[in-house]
Length: 435
Image 1 (tube, rainbow, N blue to C red):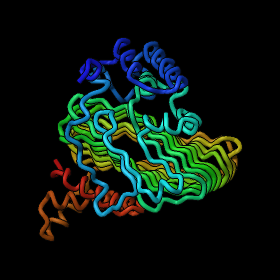
Image 2 (cartoon, rainbow, N blue to C red; image 1 turned 90 degrees about the vertical axis):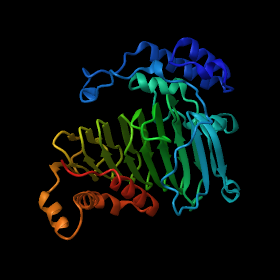
Image 3 (cartoon, helix red, strand yellow; image 1 turned 30 degrees about the vertical axis):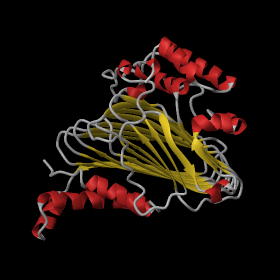
């Protein structure tokens, strides 16, 4: 390993050495420098800010993590590939690309599925047109600026006009001890295109530490259709930050499934922009927390055009002393008449020490809309547990049954069998007896 590989923290010297290793166009280097200056100038998010008032990141020490670290470390095992024949795969370890493959039949049709660091040079004009078009400019917080300055790898998916990729494409981002991943995902589907993309984030061991500070941009042009899955299963000492944003054009549709199981602390901002008439999105969120985990998800359904539909459903089950925060907003612009917007967050408490905060909201500036929201929080029904035990189940099996039933509404909306099964199995093996 060289000196940069061994260096920890995000300092000016480390950043300058990092830039010296990059072979990138001038426009990207300039963008990195601007973001780095913003990172230096901005304070860390604090609980005095409304968005962070329920999420405390004071224990985070950036100087513990390596900007570039060992990419030969053990990889986490993918959960979503059981019974799936992927049309392409990308794999990264500690922020460095390990593998990028795509079947010839899709490459011949103009599909690009590659490491973003390579795509910057191999497909410069295409990447330049879309990179940072949805996130990071201006930078919403110091961590977003850090990502824009120091991202090292990621995934670039481009599907040309009229092409439907009928095999799932899969990416795996793995973090080992004290590693950092600042990966950037950029997805472009041109008019009438279609694709399914499975994105997994994981650690090789349950107690692994690390830092993930990522971003996702999805651009769906008119009539495009996409199923996008993000499964986060980091080790229990990983800090996870992400800004995720999709733009859905006229008559396009997005089904976005989110699984959040790992990490020490997660703070994710997820935003879907419905920018063309007839655009639709469905977001399915599954969260399960244990120990002292803290997961905070802020979602925004932004209706900018008329006759659009959005449907967000997040469900969380919590045990031990863990905590979740979900804050959702449906925003309807004056031009977005005939909007149909729905958001809901349900929480199931498996102990008396856990806590779930649910904060739905509406901001409506049009007068011909249908927008509804709701949230529920409650303990496991002991009558249901007793009923299952009376039929021969152990108490743990009974609780697993109740938890599975709680999530079934979300599972029924997920159209990818491997995703349903992976989430169901991952949650079931984490469930312990109710306190």
